[in-house]
Image (cartoon, rainbow, N blue to C red; front, side):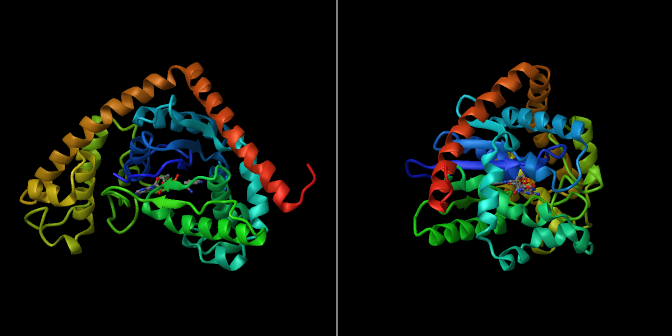
Length: 335
Ligand code: TYM
């Protein structure tokens, strides 16, 4: 595990836009849990980011609570880490505006996620979808976070975050913002779709069979792995460079078991696809069943969740408020 030096702070978050899936868990949240022992951690529910695509208000509220419950069920400890909705801390949006005045359009034009999400409908895409990475930079540096644990797909946004923090520092001749480091940890930094091993597992994929949700029960998990795209090689372990689906399932297996891909290969390489899928299902069910049960329990105690979030908001507001006072002073705003 990554060893920090002292005085380091972590900020990360997930968009509450529906069920969390195995990619969110293995690529991000599971690492957050481990990092809690060595860092001061802030884990937000990225609801401001969620509305860059249309959301139904009640569904957003529900998903925000469910995502908070998922963080805790996965092992984020509210006694150690702040859990809070991003929108409850106004400083995120406030700093995003100031940073947007230091972000050249050329930098944003390079962002591949915008290109993918806007697709052919660029002219109709909303400004928030385009300026999303500026808000993401604000999320991180408003806490002067030094490290940001994420999956591989967020790497480009975090490189931009460093560039924006650097641009602010240069503009005001200061070292005010630390340049945050991405932490992309573990075997499963990019979990792929179960239907297409060349596309990442995603909440927005139309097919629910493309992903394992943290709320899936044992039957659903078994069905989804059974239906996951296979090929006709005799064993799971051969020629993996050219078999993205087999490699993806093996990676998921290794990651769930907390072993290296090499060790998973030694254990399962000789199995055929269907035998391996059964082994994978057993591991996934054993791992996810307690998380799902805990989530259900938490969602049945809304008062407890509210208390956790209120405490998280208070802590986040304290840190972010201090940063904003200093930022406004640097920029030259009367206070
Ligand atoms: P989001 O909600 O898309 O994903 C949340 C986290 O899960 C990781 N992830 C994956 N990891 C491995 N394989 C996958 N298939 C997979 N899919 C998602 C993501 O890398 C991420 O770590 N913009 C962010 C949320 C955000 C944020 C921030 C994160 C807003 N502000 C500041 C860090 C710091 C997002 O949309 O993540």
